[in-house]
Image (tube, rainbow, N blue to C red; front, top):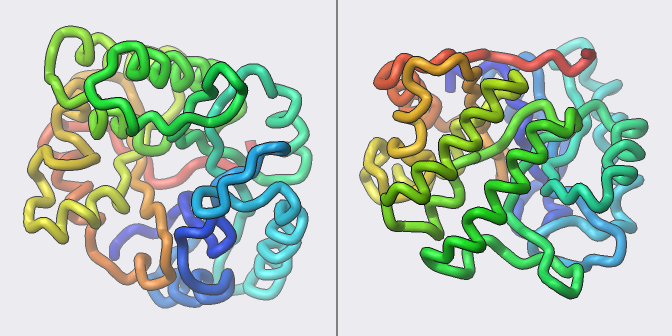
Length: 263
């Protein structure tokens, strides 16, 4: 792994990641990471998803744990505490409150809210235009909200909407246009790349990061960042960033290495 900055890191609290918080720090140090941002899946008050995100009752303990590691390892690595959150404009006050406790937020839009106010996974409805447009609406709103340092795996919608038609091209371009207009980076996700590597096709269009999406950024003034999306400590010791670099080279994308958390 040549990557020296990573702001997309999970913990066991989300229910689908492994390892203790300190294990991630030690593996990141071993890999030569200079800045490590923890961004586990954000809890939402009144919503329980035990295998998806931490419970709301775990939030304070999570922040405390990462802050203790921040102090313990301050001479070896810069650590930040954040969250990966879906964006729902209905709860803007919650994001404002989070940012008084955290260093940063990134947006990873996996869910929309259904009519009852509960989360509905965007991957459940294949080739559904209403669902796809709803996902993009939320991402575009997130980009314009000012709450998020970058957008994680913006191409995840292509897992669900599998038809490469004018409709989905327009939706992808809406995300890219908003990112360019608001100067919000988009993430090439290396956890998705992990799945592609296991299938022996890291540069094929079988899963995100989808070349279909990233090709549309060619010639655009949009920043691109690599995110490990670590769900286990040893993710820092993999070399999947080289495939992300290939995508950047392939389409002449504008890569940034780090984000300014202190801004």
